[in-house]
Length: 412
Image (tube, rainbow, N blue to C red; front, top):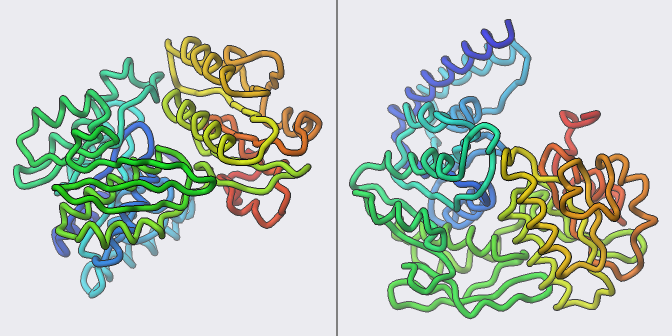
């Protein structure tokens, strides 16, 4: 019965969303990829709102329900049937009377299984497509990285000739994809062959400075966050900005307003005079390796005694899971003074300090850390590594800045 109701809601949302798009004709920016989608979405939103009236997907509104809700400018009432009835009634009113509808929609478009994008692209027609990177993820639903690439590339392939694909030049698959498209293409990346690139990158303790290079211009930039992953996000944002004829200098100034999302390399004071890097939102082989490299650089730039890596297992990796965890273990061993792992597959990272789940570790973690430690917390969403971060936080008010701390997640 619940599935039938969900299908009816999904169908009605699609119909009304199509009416909104036909009525207001916003320019749509679609974003997909295996890593960094949400950070890229927020960076694009932060930069563009300096000059445009924009709306972006909230939270994880990136699927058959969330994308239409973003188009409607509304939030899900969950399982409240009357809430849905009121939502549809409100949408019909806004379809006629909304005089403040945004000129640009930034839609994150998730791909968890084959044909996910087919459904969304059936009624959403982006003029700009951003693909962040292709990496092993959701391999229990899709057979290989090639299938992941095939699914996510549909976003760029759906563009009209006058549209623009904004692609990560440092990803070999996306580089090949760009060369095959009939639409315009703007490559971004750390490689100086990208049309928009970052150079002279310098990691400071809590920020990164670099130069933006585009069309012969060199513009200095700074972001108040950690990691090369965030550089990719702001490069994509700047690529969208120049595509929309925004001045690169203006865009670079707006980068100072870009902040890391919950669970994405956020820094907190920890108990026992430690420092915590919470990257607990999710994990896959690419993002986990990037997080370890970021923590290594952070330790080198600061006054820390030990680097402690607290790594939850990476879920949904299918047949490559064991190999991916072994590879991560080898990389972790090169830089860490202590590696603590959580979850069955994480035994392949290290089994010296292994715990069955995040709750078990939460009871023991304070006994394992020492003053002066720099602690990285990383793991897949299903492992709930933010529970460990919560125990380590020195200041209770910081709890609200961790992921999955809302009422929905309580008890899960």
